[in-house]
Length: 221
Image: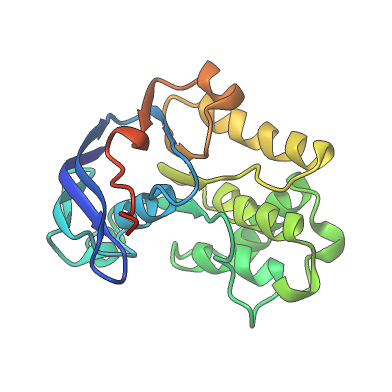
């Protein structure tokens, strides 16, 4: 499903952040990506999704060339992918409901199906009461849950999760863990989850990439 070869990631000033990264995640695989803050976890997920370009190397998703290539356009209409961002990821001019519904519109679903899948996802993530509000008007936890609700409604084949539990209290963590466990137990779902430490996710992971072995620390004078 995911095939990375000799991947290198850089930062805006051109300094390499990661180098020589190889990773293969088969269809249905559940893979952890760990590493300290700033080690490139979020950047790696965005490169796989085709949102950001690597410094060099190849990225293929479901056999399709993402890099070198056209990035996310190579996957459009070919691979159903859901991305839950660590922060942001929601359109500020849309309500939480509209953010969850938007990706579904590209599937050609009828209005009734759109409403049903959106409502189910919002209810599952405990967002029904704030569904009409825009991202700036809700808590950080609600924004993280809205990102997960969007993935849940989309029902994708490939799921990229960037620090999905960061900053959540016990109740909110339980809500997020419930949906993540559902994906982990689904043999048809390919999941790549990034966070600083493996935590409880190591129990269901079929593979683990620690970016410490590829991280290039910033040289200090």
